[in-house]
Length: 109
Ligand SMILES: [Zn+2]
Image (cartoon, rainbow, N blue to C red; front, side, top):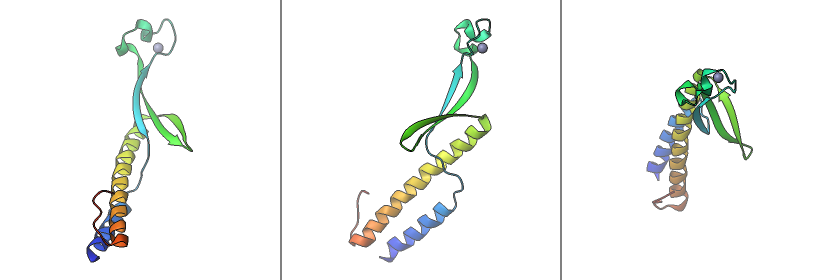
């Protein structure tokens, strides 16, 4: 029993080390502006404007899109990596908890 509790203490310590966590995905897009005389009207993807960074995530059950700056995109990317790690740690925490409560090894959580 002590082993699981020690692992939980480690998981909590790791989770406490994260600062920003964000859900969702980041898309990089290039777009035409619609002006007929602009270079982006050439049809060549190289001539499109951008890149634009779009953050997609679910908010209250609905998909939300937001255009963000490159700097924000970099921060978001880091926060998304953090969120994945925190989720994996929570998953481990759940498994250790189940082992303590059931008193048996849980193979898959
Ligand atoms: Zn244009």
